[in-house]
Length: 352
Ligand code: SAM
Ligand code: DTB
Ligand code: SF4
Image (cartoon, rainbow, N blue to C red; front, side, top):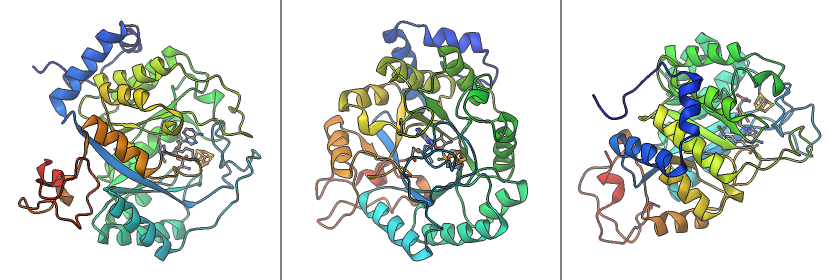
């Protein structure tokens, strides 16, 4: 048996007990699990693009894109295909390996799925992994996206089943689980996580992570977002999260889902480099990369590259995107991983 077996039978009390460990003990557990299953110095990089912004009919209390809150956001129609291609190419050139397209929909219509399928084909043709987050999906829609070449679908549980009703009333927790099952059944990789800082208790955080870990398969990607408190949303006045509590959430996610990529997601713009480093030490091995999330800010590429270089972290190239083994850095090498000295073996090819 390995030290951190893949379990699907976590009780909330067990996960709460992980949260209650002394910080150093929890970090040790997380580091041990991380090093058992991952390269501890590699981070996966995804770039987001909002392909349809604002005017969403849902009432998610954290979200600047809900039509119900006045956040001053300009609503936008579907982004044209050539702009998607340009933005994806720019993301690739900057060093991202996955391109995530997000739409402010409750669920996509037939023509929406067709339009997104065309976007997926464009992004794939550039040699990037694809991800989409479009709201609730039917099993048929999940298959259609898979057939277009989609690699990942993001759909978050957001919080615990117990706290969920305080945050969203226009769709149920079961709706979310149904979409996740449709996505999994279609053979897509699942990206599913939640938000910290919406007024939930530690028990809610434990319950959310137990929900994710007790899915029939752990999500391949688990985004942990710190609430971005957007003026005009009902949660704008929430108290900031204790940074150590946020790091603990990352660490517990790492322990209960040891093989998953845990993404340090929204909220990085206001985090210090030291705080982000603690998150990496706690087992985060994925980030959103690029100046913007969907509608809010993210650290710029220069800041992220500098941080990764200072920490000796290189970016992870998925096996399907890896180049032939003999590639070395040249003066024109576009790889953004640090360190990237001309003549050095290219980190991209050293990845599994
Ligand atoms: N409309 C689709 C949906 O809700 O499934 C896709 C886009 S939605 C913006 C994707 C996720 O972004 C949400 O589930 C939530 O976890 C996250 N998110 C949205 N607003 C946020 C905020 N202010 N702070 C942190 N995370 C946020
Ligand atoms: C996820 O868990 N976080 C991302 C992505 N999945 C789609 C979105 C964060 C959004 C933050 C608020 C905004 O930029 O609008
Ligand atoms: Fe709409 Fe998604 Fe925002 Fe909820 S999180 S209001 S579904 S865009």
